[in-house]
Image: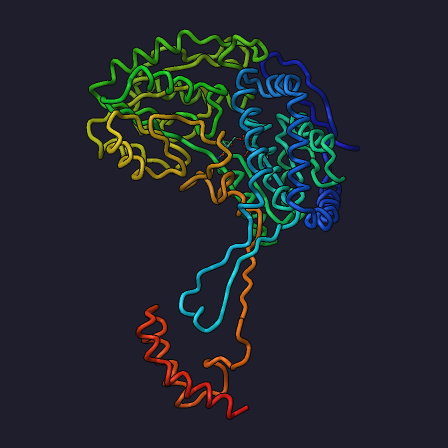
Length: 516
Ligand code: NAD
């Protein structure tokens, strides 16, 4: 009997639908079909790939309202965020990679220094990998897998998506969009189910895995992928700090903190999870943040006036409850919020003061609508507190002094640091995204992200194939003398020094020619 998976609206508990779990044999067969489709897809021109991705954009634009509604219902997020944080950014990503992938992946001549004097030339060409397995989380269930699929397809790969078990219908919608756009059969496929289906996808040995999720699952996937030497990009958790100096525009920083902490009910990998404010500005900033937080409307996401939606699952809200409880026990103060609404999955946006890095909610990822605030006295202390974490996904620095802000930004250990801005750069598909430390390995988005989806091939050419190379066999005392010259002169990179090697080099070449 086939297992079933039922998806629910976390805001209302209503059933979205039920579908079949893909068993391991079917997952393997799906990857095989993807491999067969790859043999043809990899030969298509960039112009053809661009035409199809732009057609998929049109399908999405035509269905935008119903897609936003589905995202809101299946994930619990406000429809406002389905549009602003998922659909609009991914539409931009689609046009960017459709138009620019050819340029970004164009063959590239490499400068090879003095080897060019020997009549040699090198270039790199980029080949697609094959089947890319995409295993996303539920928090941005549309834009993350769709964006990664577009990049993989533009690079000439085919795609198998295993959506999160909490948002399977959004995953199926992605495949439907590509189908309606006219993509060839099996270029984009989905398999559905939970962790076991994800594990079966890894086991089926695709040519790359793009994983987004928790550190714990990332470790399991990396270990399982190692068996087949499958390379993996890991986009993992975060505990992102926001550092606010007293000379920052505090009303602006307060608004940014509120959005950064509470958008998607705090369930963003790049949420503001820790706020460090310079002590002199702490009282003022806290008041601004609390006042702003109290204006937010929380409710069912399809209501267009709602700013904060439901959390995704019981498991997730339990973590938030535990962390807030720990803050209370440890003596921090709950300024506003701090509780779940009855038995629902709505957790009130919560502002906490008096937090320290020793508290649970300042070290482990909360992934919920909490904004704990701590203070610092000096620039060095701010950097130290921000870096005191196993994570390093994003961070932000707020100051009216740009030089100071840039200095601090470069000292923070995170894959992205924004200055006087917060959270949103995953929405800029043109820029690289990925973590330092336990926040991940590899990159998605940007030119760096596209490079994860190809394998570089080095083509090296001897443009003067008339003479033997001086380093070929047989060796002799004359050869060894030449190689000493290579080490001391040629390898210095200096043309002048290398020129003095010319007589010895000629002697050696004549020696090799004579021996032929
Ligand atoms: P998760 O690790 O529980 O699940 C992620 C995906 O992995 C799901 O599709 C799940 O079914 C699948 N999975 C589970 N076990 C598996 C296994 N053994 N083999 C293969 N696949 C398996 O994470 P989640 O709760 O869905 O997502 C929340 C986490 O994602 C947070 O830590 C968040 O920070 C992170 N996240 C990171 C980014 C980023 O860009 N760095 C973006 C979004 C979310």
